[in-house]
Structure formats: structure tokens, C-alpha cells
Length: 296
Image (cartoon, rainbow, N blue to C red; front, side, top):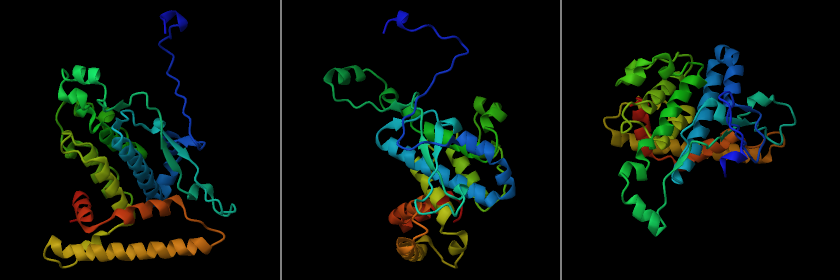
């Protein structure tokens, strides 16, 4: 369109983003964090477990985007929307805040998508571009890095790179990053995950899929005490982990069966996320995840 069609905007004006969703969001994650300061202080384990669930949903969404070659590039609390997810048969007996909200990723203004070369003219023009431009490799783990910053902000801590400006200007190690307060059984794992996502070297940075598995392990296990058995080598742990997976799957199926006949409670989002984890869990990936969490 010609320049005369739209009036020039002043510096004080901001972009207005219109988001169309199937469900109506009740708040942004920024609202949730701001409203939960007292909850985090009073019930840190409950709050940090909720944070793990929100991060898990974020990782699920980012994993889906990556399968389609999309990098979001603007992950911040304001761009993550929360939808109330109250079970249909709760009859109002439970408070709304007890139910896990559904997280929606919004605002794709800065998103990049890996180019699909189908057109012959496009192929010819791309033959003159550097590989990192064609593959958008400079953005490959951009979302991972921003997810690491979100961990700090969700836990009511400032962005480390705003707090410590020198981190942006020089090479840093995970030890240079601010420590997260140890308030619950989830704090140490979230700290380790943040460190791995904020690695200065993108090659060393964990992938979103690995971050997802770390969060699943934090939420549902296996716990450290299972790994403290007197076993001489990793191969001996594989049968133990397989037995653990089989037991957890059986217990979850029993829970689903009970919910199916319960007129007052239905299967919730948390149950489906757990089901997703156990459906794909296998000893080799669990061993790798436990190493990332420094539980082995």
C-alpha cells in the first residue's frame, strides 16, 4: 500500500496485536506472576509446581512450532496467555485457582520460518545466500534462550541480563548467572534447567525437547532415591527404570478408570500431560534426562 493510505505513527504509539483463539484467555502470564507473589511466599511448592506445568505447556507448543520450522523469537510473559481450564463436572465445589490453566503462545510478529524451497527462482536466489541465512541457524536455539529467561521471571526474579549488564558484553559461564532461591523440591531442578537453556554457546544449549523431558521428570519422577540403589553401572538401571515406567502407567490407567465412573471429577489437563509423558518414556531417554538434572 502507498504511504499516503496510513497516517505516520508517533514514537509514543505501540503495535496493537490482535489474537484470535478458540478459547477466551483470562489473563497473561505477566498478570499471573504479578498476582502470585504472596502465593509463592506462602506456598512455594504449590506455586513452583504450577510454574513447571506452565513451562511444560510452553515447551510442548515450541516443540510443535519447531516441527514446522517456526521460531517465535519474542517469548515474554506478556505473549503467553492463560485460559481457565475448569473440568466440566466440578459443580463449583473446587476453587478455580486449583485447576491448571491452559497456556497459549501468542504474538508471532517477530517469528521466523525456515524457507521451503519449492520455487525454481527461489532456489536460484537462495544459492547465493550463506547457509546460516537459509537455515536461520543463527536463530536455531533462540526460543530456548528466552525460555531460560522466563524461568527467572516466573519465579519472581529479574531477567539476569538486565540485572547484570556485563553478561551481555562478554563470555559467561552458568556459575555467573544469579542463583534462584531454593524454596521447594522443584527449585534446584528449575535452576539447572535455566542454566542449560542460558548457555552462552548455542551448541551446548539444551533443545526444547530435552527441556520438556526435564520438566516432566521434575513433575512425575523418577525421583533421586530410585537412583541411589547400589547398582554398579547404567545398564543395571535400565530394568529398574522400565519397571518404574510400567508401574506408573498401570497406576495412571487405574486413575483414568476411576475418573470415568466418578460423577463429580473428570480427567484434567494435568492427567493428560502425565499420560503424554508416560506414553513416550523409555529407559534410555530417562537416563539422559536424569544426567541433565544431575541426579545421576
